[in-house]
Image (cartoon, rainbow, N blue to C red; front, side, top):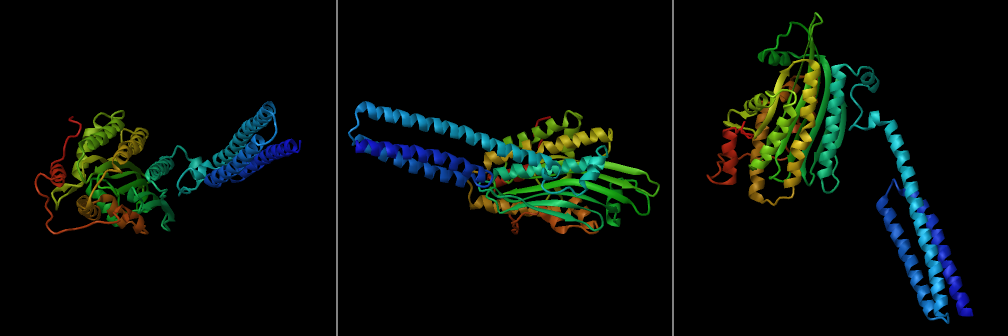
Length: 442
């Protein structure tokens, strides 16, 4: 009889402990659900193991007692029913509470979505953006902030160890500012820079001369301007993953008579270190699909423009395998030009991320790494000597030089008279760079 009382008492104690655990389990999870789910799971597992050990002890005690088989079975059934029911109730209650906490959090985020959905606060005050939604300057600013955020989050998702972008929001005393996002020393991306700028003021003389040289009819005197754009350069660690660059921008200039000129510019281009024709075909096909709904002539025209623009004269070779490039786009009207630019900007992720996922874990050796560094040297040469955007930035008073030069790789290399041997992988890419290819056979 004493054995029976002992076992029943111990079993009731176990059920009581289990019930207490349910309360602790849910209180604990509610407390840390939004703080540390890993710790939560570890503590839960620890408690479950302790209770399981106690159950085994009770089972052994029961087997060694004088209970009849029926009595033991009845106790096990009752105890198991209580535990299973308790478990079901606990799980249902736990999920419900988690959902309530999650919904409360979502409600909080939604309430502040206007300022928290981007990498940082907009440069233009939110009230101004909301009050001028039909103004092209405000529409373009919101577009570039979205493109920046989407692209940064997509790149972060490819990193294997949680590397994140450093976000630097800066202001320019002459007017405006920018948001510079840089990821350095990641396991997938050695250096990735995604920058937006929203600047205004008076055009400097150097910028005016540059614009006139390409046919812009600008009046004499002070010329107030507004420029907004997003630009990115991604330098991967693995030499089998290509570098990508894109830039999309909007520009307004107002002369002394109040007449306003506006135009869009931009493009996306790819710079592989080793040639993979499937990658190049995918990249160009994605860009063509972004262009065609707006004008069937855009892709071939802007592809040719890209091949000419990203050419390094002193090396007699292109920087990469091209893409699209355009400038001074002021037609057919502002609305359709904006739609086209938006379509191109949104095509960056589908054009590039599949290539990253496919090749980021490809094997490579020191020979591939050294070639990658040499090709990055060519990238630096083009950006510092020929790139129009870099020049405009350096000419602009109050320029943020760290942001302008974010396109430069973390590491690069120059060697005297490095000419790859015929028949090598390195020679294959050089051949393509010297003779731009029609990737889609148009």
